[in-house]
Structure formats: C-alpha cells, structure tokens
Length: 71
Image (cartoon, rainbow, N blue to C red; front, side, top):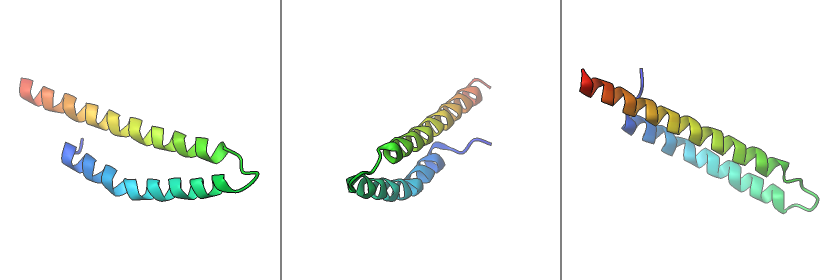
C-alpha cells in the first residue's frame, strides 16, 4: 500500500529534526582540529538517500493516482 502525499509529508517532517540534529553534530565535529570530512560526506549521502526514497514514494503515489483515474 502506498501512503498518500499527506502521510509522506508528515513522515518527512517528522524525520527532519533528526537530520538537523545529525547535521549540527557533524558540523560541531567538523569544527574540531584534525577532523576528517568523511563524516560530512556520509551525512550528505544519507540525506541524499532519504530524499531519493521520498521522491520515489511520491512518484509511486502519483502513478497510483493516475492509474485510479484511468480505471
């Protein structure tokens, strides 16, 4: 079952504070001397993965709605 757009937006908004906390944590770590940028790349990759998954879900929802309109 594909959740509706409202549910997906709710899930994204609920996940946003966690991503912000992680980003702030990574930013603080990045300010430390000798810290590698590996963690920032990792965080950016996780955010990218989340956004791609969200976009895929929204695309599936749109396709399901189009299919329902055709039927």
